Length: 414
Figure 1 (tube, one colour):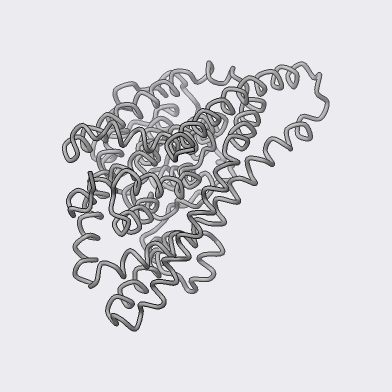
Figure 2: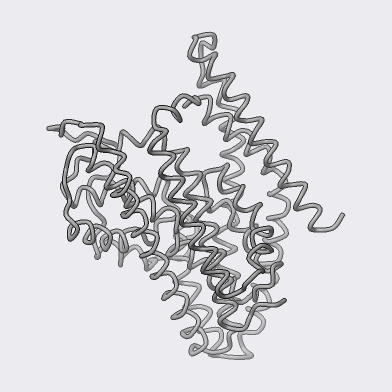
């Protein structure tokens, strides 16, 4: 069977798993609400287990994959000047993308004003399990640099792994032939890990089925109706962001945008149904190379993108922060909102591996602007539904970034 046929069949199985999970989740939710199921946690445990195992398998290979592919990618550039040139273009693209995503969220939430009708009273005590302090510049800088690469890999601190790999790759490139043995070993290791990725992806439809069953059984389809306005407006924003990203891609690669979408549909589906853009990382790397992107550039841009270019998550951050302010009747003028956007430009970086990372960043940001963190409770129930859209858009954003940088660097085949 050809690679494209295998990919198409896996995509079909993932969609079937998603639909079946929604259906079973709906039935289980009805039985849970009617008390027909005495112990729902025990019944749902196997479904959450299969999804969690799949995500653990993915996390098992993400850090080693970033480590090996990034070092090889940097070493093969040949010198620090080439690394600096590609890195500069990549970061410029990421900064521009971050600003567009955050600004779009800010514009949409001011246009739709989804929180205005809630009229919540500002609470005296602000309870909550999420952090209530903003991430400072000092915290951010400390977070970038690892004290141990082994510790960073063990904790899946991808940004720290990226920093170590960049230093290692530049050093390897600078000593030339002496590093060839190590670079070849890491290159072989990367290919072995990518082969492992293929094996792990065979479990994706089962994991998607379990994840969807668990979410719908716990939350019910009714929650979509309760927060339909917020969910609908947020997803409209995601579609607008998608249009902007595809227009940017079209400006560089023209009609090949359609082919790009066909290649990344499977990683996008995996991210959507598992609520994790990280889960799509290994498969996305393979598909971008199949599309024609230079292996060295994908190995360089994609890991950085997972720390600095989470387009869907960033749009959500301004949308959610201002939604909470509206719910409490707190007016923020234009200057304050721009300040919030700039704070989010900083605090949104480098926490891709943190569970519910977008909510953590929102919690820290609204605390800075004296908005009650208790408002996060409004979003906790629907966060899994929102996270599906965020995660899939993160995948699209990083795909476009990899393709554009490949095109600019004349590393795009076809």
